[in-house]
Image (cartoon, rainbow, N blue to C red; front, side):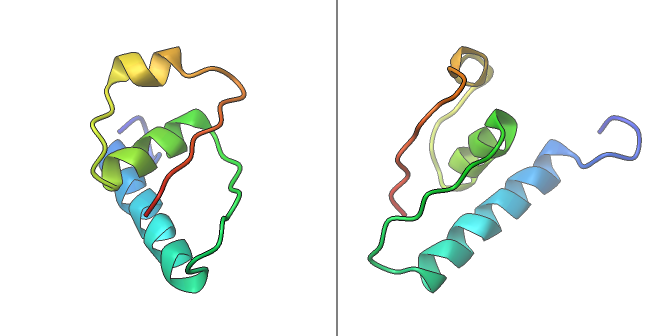
Length: 69
């Protein structure tokens, strides 16, 4: 953690909870979410995807990813 900011572990937990909440609130529909690359990367990690620093650094801007939960 840098200073008083959020740790990557805390961000991963928050991102995972957000994905889980969307899956429950919007079953069987497509949800478009806009976010920063770090949040998206941590959400993918929380959902069990194997994502590393190289993936995060190579992510184009803007990036579009389909995440099926």
